Amino acid sequence: MSRKKYSPEKVISILREAEVALSQGETTGAVCRRLGISEQSYYRWRKEYGGLKVDQAKRLKELEKENNRLRRAVSDLTLDKQILKEALSGNY
Image (cartoon, rainbow, N blue to C red; front, side, top):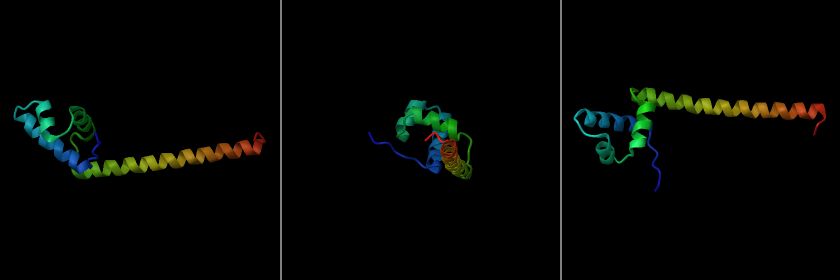
């Protein structure tokens, strides 16, 4: 089964649609089947995006991407530092 990748905007629209259906008395399982998502995805998305607006979700994803980029940069620099330290001590 292939995995679909939903944009934050699409996830928020799905969550809003699900909340409307749930408030009308439908069960979570029925709503998820109708929307074509798993219950696990619904709960994960609700935990991550619950209460966010579309622009806030975009900003959140941008910040997560920037954070990952900075973490990689720090780990690369740390590795370079360790290599240089070993080379200076003569343990190569």
